[in-house]
Length: 137
Image 1: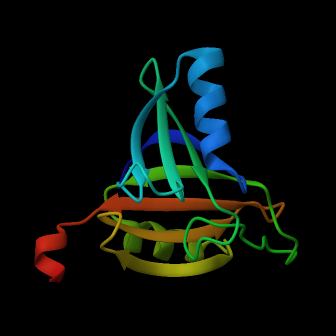
Image 2: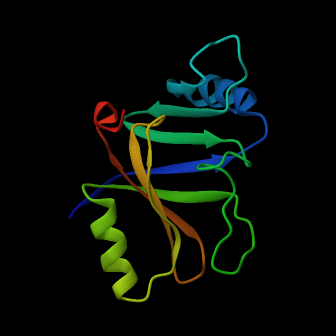
């Protein structure tokens, strides 16, 4: 298995405000938003600058929201890594004692399979891979 596509995800109650700020201040462009309807408030957004991504999520989103670390304290951000096999990565990490915070689960709305593990200080790490959502339907 390989890991790639490092990005940073921050939690906020006002994603619209941060999307506007990062766009105007630094030139980030919105790559994706959820919901897709521009008349609705943003619940999740991906911004990109020079090929690097910055994601924003609501703190109470069931998959991208604040996560307890190994210490059960909420965190304000998460390191995200794409892998070609989330299940194999979680199995390998579990075998060496890495805490698994959330088991691998398909997320058809995102087109991803995702899991969370913790680093030695309890900070969550999101592991994800693309899935074929047509196979899930």
